[in-house]
Length: 478
Image (cartoon, rainbow, N blue to C red):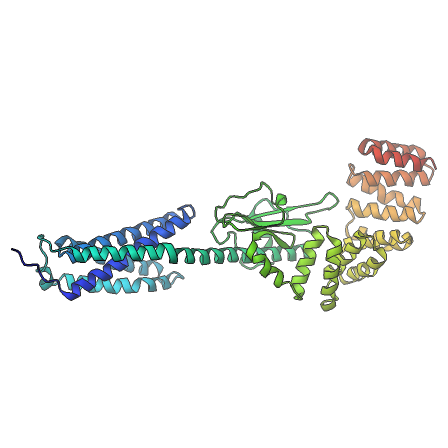
């Protein structure tokens, strides 16, 4: 009867350590590949994961064979140890002096074990222990049971916790990236009076970096391309709305246009994250409470929230926030302008006038506040006071149909029909499909007794807007 051979204690410990490293390596490679679903991995990353998984499997097989004193286990462990040392050497040479170099710290324990394994298993004393007869396999079965317990613990408990924490961190990183780009876009708008009008995110980077954002990112936390859109409302001269979005983990956008998204909380990592006109309108629901708590009294948060309501045409809600913000920063030209415009949009024209005056004084290039101030004066029955700011707006934007129309209108209301003709005729040439300049020009010609030209403009109004034509006919008969 054969007597079972004695297994050296050091060899048993080596087998257990090799098994543990193999299990961890195989599970890590499988978990990362499953998590990312191999969609967001580069070919280099996928290759490294494949090698890591193969290394783990070979380590597990060699550990079982080592416990059985099978010579194949010794050969396999020598091979995997050599491969691990070679891989660490290649990584160190490749990453030397780069940010990836600290990642080698993770490989140091494995490299030490590999070096010890090679030295120990290559000795003649240990080599003589092995043959192909094999020994009782109870230790190998025990090690397999331990593997199942470790794998179950890692996959059922640790992996979900790590995945959830990391995923939420990626969402938070994406939101921070989007916010920084939005801040740069709004700074651009303050200077240029409109948001960037671009056809691609790379083109947006050219507009904002480095003036407004030193190193502008192009991708979200999942390494997917971000998306930007800007658009204008019918009465705007240039883009007055914008949106920035990430397609989420699945990189697929749910809507064709970023304008189509509505306010909502999301729970799925695949859901889109959308920031529009100063606030997130589609982002993780659990972060909404945190976001709201941060808006308290911080001036920048107040301004962003007020601006978001302003662009959403919720002027009655924006007004108290702008007021609160201006208590801390009374000389912010843009805030004065938006508060004044908000007052105009809720028909509080008398309240709007001092704010629009201040905005105009603070910003010598703000033609919109001057234009709105002229209209506010008309609404309170003082169109003659609106002539000066309207002329200033035209001087700043001489080829702007809107401001030329406003100047013509306040001149009409101040009974200066002859003076109104020139700016209104220019407005008509600049925007021939807009009804209001034709309407006002017809009234100006009528006021100076030129009925033929008044009728010509009335005919155009009738073609563009029959309803307005009926009102104009009534005015021309007076």
